[in-house]
Length: 147
Image (cartoon, rainbow, N blue to C red):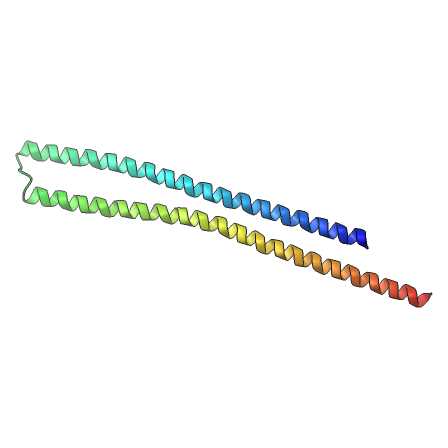
């Protein structure tokens, strides 16, 4: 009986350890993906800023060549362009932060799922141990009756 209980406990411990290790790895992987997304978003933002700087420089050069003084319609167009650029940047930043948060949530979810599965394994082992103890008691009682 002791051997069976020891085997059940050892098997359960290994199972729980494996589930926890896998979940920890998954969570770390998701956190790495979130950091990679953050770096990629920073790179994309830098590329967009460089491109927008080039566009604004071309627009300013065109306005200077046309002899505009920076007042009136060209200035209002430039202002509206700047507002649009700001809005676009906010949208890109929000999207990036949402992706990062999603990766982190997926990692936490994997960890939580493993915790629940581990508890299930422990309860299952507890039931098996209780059943084994009950079966041993019945066998001993039956042996006592026949003697």
